[in-house]
Amino acid sequence: MTGEAAVWHRLAALLPPEEAREFEDFWSIGEQEAGLELLVSSLSRRQVVIDETTRAEIAVVCEAWGMWPRPLGPVLAQCPGEGSGSAVRLIEDATRAPLPGAAAGLRDQLLLVPWIRCTGCGRVLARAHIREPWGDLSCAPEEYVILNAALSDTLRLFGPGNGWDALTALRTCCERPGGPSPAPSHKG
Image (cartoon, rainbow, N blue to C red; front, side):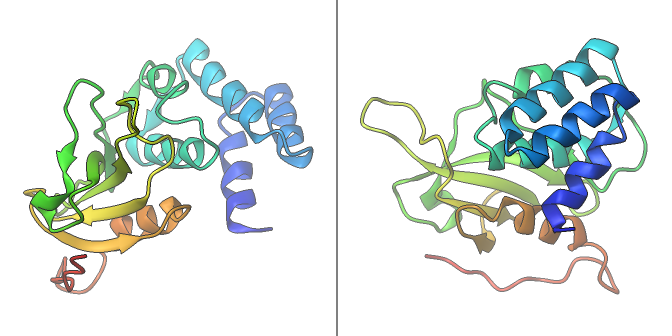
């Protein structure tokens, strides 16, 4: 089972058996978008309590399939959270203006949307977008960026389509002996 398929299977366990089978079937037939709509709407409708790490994982899977932040971000936000010791927390705020990429040592054209924070060290996973000619941010991020807690320095960059790798790096930044180690800056 691939990594993404394993995550999909694990997320199915959040649903009642009949919906879980339908969710798994959507994976099998290549209808991931419909499956994600089923997952998030069911969790919201049933008010399933999910921990913050799971919420962040769902956001990353939705992002990979073009379903984040719209249309599923607002629906996922309606799910009650569990205040336990999750390693990461979804922090995206649609009302907050994106940060200029240059402020974190990146290309001027990039705009950073802080997305997920490590609860241990405060590092942030952000999505780096460009502004489209009509004014909106690009649908898909150009890069994923791990920033320091002050959002002022880029610690790691991940290419487009590597949101899951970026989340994994963020989740493990505090698991090294002695806590977070200073990562080399990759300014571009």
